[in-house]
Length: 583
Image (cartoon, rainbow, N blue to C red):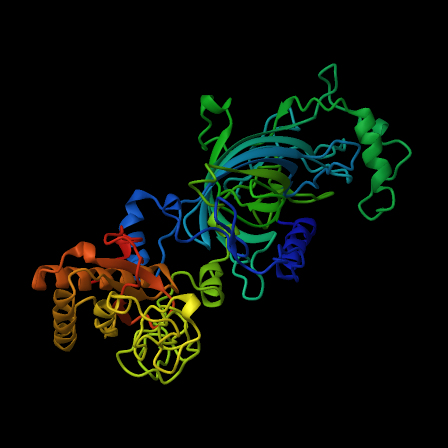
């Protein structure tokens, strides 16, 4: 039967499990990506990193990266290997001895391996070795039914099947005691819930409960004979201490006398079930089915190490002889069978190690907060599909109103990066109204038409006006497409005619959009589509174009203008992020 001491231990564990957890790992800096290994502050691991995903779940991971599936794949996680030791005691008919009884208490140790299959459930295979000890402080004279204490045989009591007995009632007192040695193998299903954190990133305290199935092989022996293999004279051993059941104040003295007067060899085999299996492989131990349950607390020391406190209660199937005694203690009269079977309590302290390559495996999932990715993505989006920003451009010159220093520029006038009309010679008169496009510095200032004070040498105003006749404009795209609309094709046909009329002029094609890698690739695709259209449909040499992409401005527009005198640039540029291309 499970006595009050073990119920109290279980209750303490349950109370701790429901208490407020203050030992938390908090993030003191804003969440951001930093360092060569891209460790995310505030998140357990990089959800986008394919190194953590096993091959069997890589298809889901690819779909997630391509925004075709909303849920990331479950990462590969480490195994846990643990060892520990603790108090191992039987709850039965004979009171247990604990470690404070002059070191005579029960003890045990264990080793386990554990694997997490999700953020809540994990399984564990654990081996326990235990030695439990017990001793009664009350004498008993009703032991004729226990073959470990009597040497004159026994026979069934007439009319009471299955109860052994002898005709004579012994008169010498005995003190029940035992030493039980056990090997126990358990397969546990463990449930963890404390890793779900709604208001903090992580926890340093793990709380779990478990149910176990397993087997136990045990052997119980009693200390009934002295060094000369004679029965103990308990009257002499306990001299000076009253042994009546009602005298409880002498309990400690009686146990001290017994411990000093007995040799502790436990040489006599206790009563056992003869029909139970006793395989020789376990040194003639009784083998039985042993379900168990318990609670545990884990304190995280580092990513690799944690310390665990656990209490396991084992209830071997239909077993009342773990302590070698099936009868409740009686001073006299008929024997009384125990009301309940015996149980085992193992309260342990252990240290656990997480095993695995940290570059390919995350911590066991019961240490990770499954809300990490969701909360961090909402606050610092990296994977979330966001709508492209729409920035106003009232005059249609390709420069948004926010950055346009010259609003209201007439349609078709080439502008610089500030949205102001180009002024090639810097004389203060825009090129579209400058009758002397290149005025030497020494001839400035100029008049309202851009003509300087110096006489114009032959040809000084005739070199650039030809390229100046190539108009500027912008091509508008919709959505994420790089296809050129029919209206834009007509606009580019007009540009092609102007370039054919000015065979020495180059044209700059500039794509906007630099807020993300996707926008940069889309900007490249659209500039490339325009140049290919001009080359394939109108036969314009590709080398007459200057390829620019990823500039500031409306990401849905591509601007074109004539190149400035001496302006050069590549006609072919490698795509920045071809894997993100969308057509």
